[in-house]
Image 1 (spheres, rainbow, N blue to C red):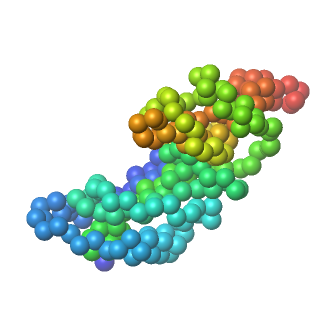
Image 2 (cartoon, rainbow, N blue to C red; image 1 turned 60 degrees about the vertical axis):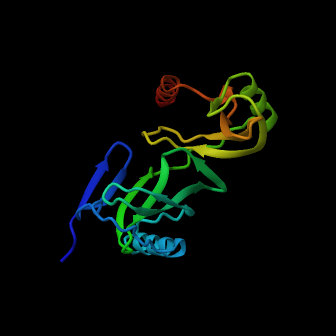
Image 3 (cartoon, one colour; image 1 turned 90 degrees about the vertical axis):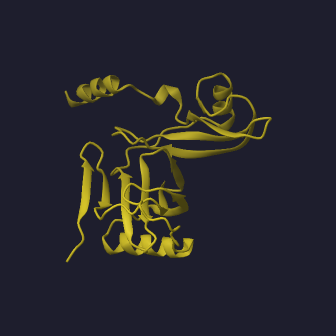
Length: 208
């Protein structure tokens, strides 16, 4: 007999959560003996592959030791997405599988919008993006002053429905006290970015 599960789907962006509905085991006083990280990854990948839930553009990211919704202790296998050669950044392209102490999949959380390639646009140089960040035109998170250690290109994916997924320059930084923070700047040149209203008007003109 199949075990009961709860399924929650968000139609706006296609994301979903699957949760094992068995009772919470938070009353246990003995520290659970969780499977190894290698076993967690294997269990997660076998579960996803057997149900056709692991996209071709996904890659294994990490194993996290965090509390779960249906269990007091789980290990979570995390997968992320690549668009072409570039990794994504943001909560809109994540797939997590939580495994309980007995090796059973307790939760699956997937946010993975279907994407269709639109067109290529010219992008800024890394130096131009850095200058914009220094001038306050980008986003800085968990810090505002320090040293840029690495600059890479990512595609930003939001957990909300997006009309377009666009590339960003992603900055990995460190402050004088050793704390790490990051920043981002849109990679496409500003003159090629149009508002939704401008795009609609342009489309309507072409249709006449």
